[in-house]
Length: 160
Image (cartoon, rainbow, N blue to C red; front, side):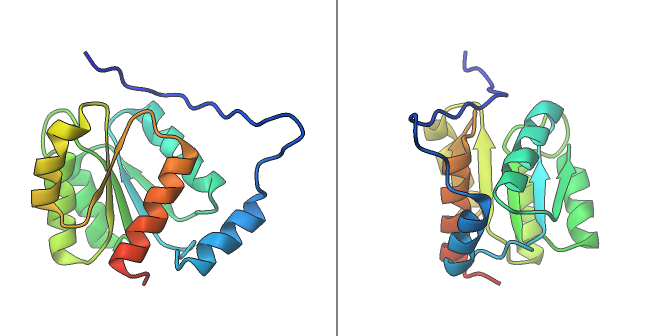
């Protein structure tokens, strides 16, 4: 059985420091990533939702909305159109993340990154059929892979 990750660790070689947030922000801005984009995070596990929010904040984003269900995600998107959707695929009972993201994207054009604790190979066909151009990440999510997925999502989708 696959395990869900709720922690991330970062290892830096001695004598080397991670790039400063200011430099990372400048790099993302040059790559067309709007740091003021409203990001809708759809995740039913509170610890993982907070981890994703923390990673996004570390990457320089501040307009982040966390919701725990597909229904809440659709309602939140009606109030404020997301610039990016990051969604777990499996959300427990009710509308799942793929259906929620597809519903939102049908009303507004936003790039989507799906996250899952399950097999990417099994999830990919459904994700690709539901939301064209969506990215897919496996939990636990690392900052660098999230940043890469965000840059790819905006460059493939065209930054707004």
